[in-house]
Image (cartoon, rainbow, N blue to C red):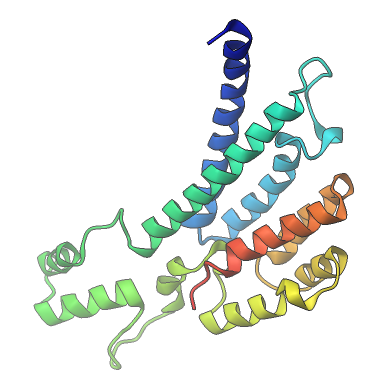
Length: 227
C-alpha cells in the first residue's frame, strides 16, 4: 500500500467509527426503549444528526479547514446507516426475546422461592411476560406490562391503535413531504415531536431528501411495530 492510499484509509477510518458509534446509539435507543421520555430524546437527536452527518451545514461546528470532504462524509453516512440498522435489529431482538432476562424456568423458580405455589408462580410469569392474568385477579394496568414489546413511537398505544396510526401515516396517502409531515404533526404519540424536529432542519434538505428521511423513519417505526 503506497503512502497516499494509506493516508486516505487513515482519514476515512475515524469517519466510519464515529458514524458507526452514533448509528449504534440511535439504533439501540429506538430498539430497546419504550418510554415516551426516551422518545423525546430520540427526537432531539434527530436535529443533532443533521449537523453530525453533514446535512445541515449552517449548524456545523467545524471550520472550513476542518470540514470533512464529500467522500469522508459519505463513509460516515454509510457507517451510520448500516450500524443503526444493525443496532435497531439487535435492540428489538433483545427486547422481544428478553435476552437480558432470566429464562421462564428460572423466573418460575424465583417466584416459588418467594413463597408462591407452582400454579401461582406460573400465573405470575404469564402476567409478567404477556399481561395475561386470571379472572379473579385485580390488576392495575396490564398495558404497562405488555408495553415493553412496543416501539418507542407507540409505547402508549395498543396494537389496534398502532395499525391505525401507521395506516393513517402511510406514505401512499400523501402527495408531497410537506403534506405528509403535517399529518405527523397532527398525529399522536411521539410523532408530533419528531415532526417538529424535522420541520426545523428541512430548510437544509431537498424535497427528495425530506421524503427519504420521512420514509425511513416511518418504515423503521411501522414495519417493526407489533401486528
